[in-house]
Length: 152
Length: 152
DNA sequence: ATGAATGCAAATAGTTTGCACCTAA
DNA sequence: TTAGGTGCAAACTATTTGCATTCAT
Image (cartoon, rainbow over all chains, first blue to last red):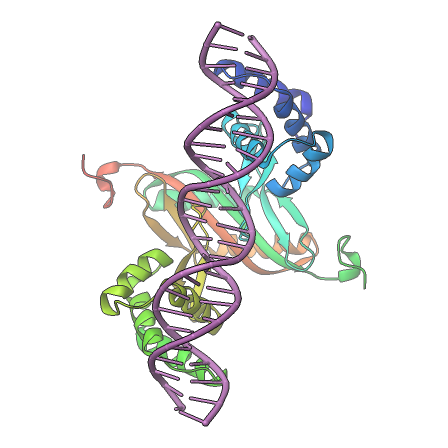
């Protein structure tokens, strides 16, 4: 995962480039966003952030996450549950998601074989691939091995 | 695409099994749903349906599409644009989507190689695959060849 | 008759926006 | 000083739900 310093550096540069301002709120949100580690919903992040900055409002979190996406330090994800999730953007690596329908755990995966097939498929239809979204939904093979399975 | 008679038969059976009732609205919605051919939003479908049945309300379309999904004759899709889309469910075949970001055309694809990799990946993480979602986003290689590219 | 389905309107949930006040540069 | 940012509340969008009425069986 992207370390905080580099994310902050990128954000600062973006902010400067756009003639925007560096604020305490943005710092706090970035810090908690990176600490959360990935796949945070706005609601989650807001809760976390409000521990450090009680007055901070939801609108600011929404606006700031959009800013992070524009600055290239976050990706927006939409699993089918009606709320957007965000995760730190890494410089190089790309990954897709494997989601357990039983316990909600989200794994990340990357598969070169699939990646390359995708470009071929796009080309077959006369398109150049520029993005994709791939989610695999599964169920625990053995519940006991699942770290998040709710204790009976 | 699923022919209307078989979809209607399946729906009728499901309705009977559940002790539900056969209504004119459900017929109309099914007819237009199948005619639309796939990837319809509720808004689209409502507009279409209201031509045939002016008084028909949005809530009924929402409820009926959920019914179609339960009855196994429709799938719900969520591309990231904030509104759900529905398409007829086929008996056998499964497909994923290839979407042109330029003109909005939605192609369908199916790739056995990718399908099989997915199960392997799920297994590696201790899950059994039970569903997946895969979208490829691309851009037209040659705009002229694109049937839906907006005329300049 | 009678329970399910409809249509309308009101309620939700997630997200966006308008605006007066605040704050970084 | 002065644009840009924040916080709050109101607005919006997609969808769901409560309820009186209508309709299929």
